[in-house]
Length: 92
Image (tube, rainbow, N blue to C red):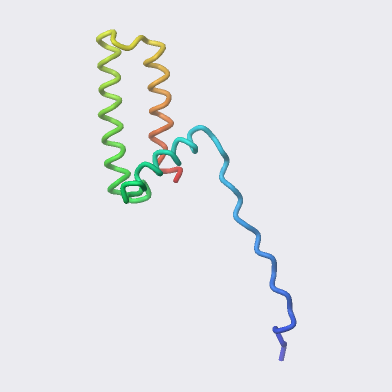
């Protein structure tokens, strides 16, 4: 019989922190907004609704660019930010 009472427990290695990237930080911010309303992007229905809302915003910005309300440079920056934001449900 092996007595385990005298053995020291193994040290638990904490999980590594995820890399801090702009897309990850943005995902955490979006997730916090949803959590403040009792929702989470980890919920598939909420993630789908988020993507639908983002599609509507992109359509609005594309229309603003098409009618010269937003110039090409600003439009390009906004589209790049929305592309990163679209990753939020996969990053949280």
